[in-house]
Image 1 (cartoon, rainbow, N blue to C red):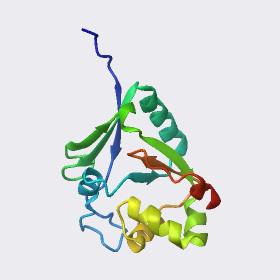
Image 2 (tube, rainbow, N blue to C red):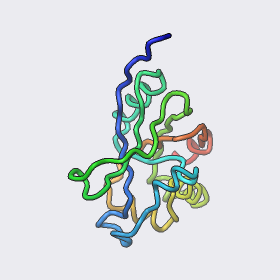
Image 3 (cartoon, rainbow, N blue to C red):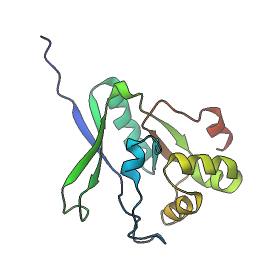
Image 4 (cartoon, rainbow, N blue to C red):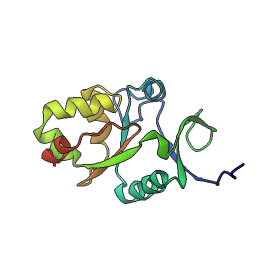
Length: 154
């Protein structure tokens, strides 16, 4: 029997509730359920270089991307695992310039917001509080990619 190698765990937290700066603060995002039923197929994060390194390790088979949420108050309560994704799940990433998409491509914005598990208004409200850097990273939980459409928006 082959000995199974130990993989590093990288944690990606999804929010169960809208953040306090959001107009829907305190209401459920339903991100967990949307991930489990395939309606949220990615997440968008600002720290591009960090997540590129993490996803490279996962794609090599050296790590697991553990999607989790806080069971109560963040950083105080326990985390619950939604999914553990490995190289077998076809996870990946694409670099995105969200400012340009918001400004120039309304149709594409609707698609990205929907695949992120949000209505467009909620998506815009979610990201307007974050000082958007020039680029963000879309972390895909499935084989779905935007490809050339994404690059036209950058």
